Image (cartoon, rainbow, N blue to C red):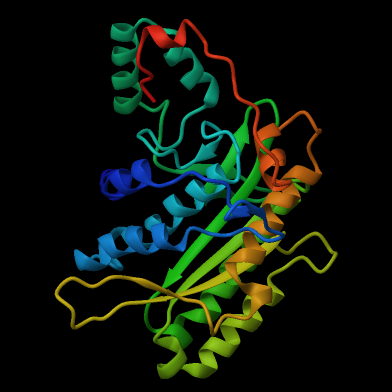
Length: 305
């Protein structure tokens, strides 16, 4: 399974590398109140497993969602080394190890990098200890000195909606309590992607889905999620080269991606000192970012990661 997941993430690397990393808080140079997701990139990523007939196999469809959400957090201005899954293998690796690798001579850095890929220092999965059990968390932002700041669980459902919805609800509620009990200040989110065929085939299940997404949130008792979000996508099964499209008009605004990402980003910034996440704060306020001075040492060798 680990090898399959590694290959699945690798399928998205080209699209992620070439994707724009512009601020999600600006549209035509104007500051926005809500996060503006790059839906075109998500459509590109999810089209990869759909075209290879691997929507459900090995979770490749869901991993496309994970890779996209991690990219969106980087667009928000959070340090790319702190956000997992990383855009390159290994997907889960301490920022301190990455900094060490950048300072090593090139040949030694290559050798250490290969050793990490072959050993246990790097991983594809981020397993986080909650109050009662370990939880494989899909998107994480963390550093050893601060602990987890953002923990995001994702689920994708493309068929059998009504049959599986109750199980997803129970799992999600238990995971929220497990994680928030140990990390009460972390932004803990749940993001649910469904195929838009639910609107026609099982409209009652869609109404239950919206209700579920709302009820999974924290009502003030500290057990629900900081934020929850819902997204509908669809594609033409008869097409030889199907393209996934985001379906936005049927998703209520209070459970849409825009509010979800806005709440998650704000939750992180609200509980951290002003001198942390400087770029994210500037982007959130629609301000220009400072231009970092060039590091002469960094120009002597190409970055590895």
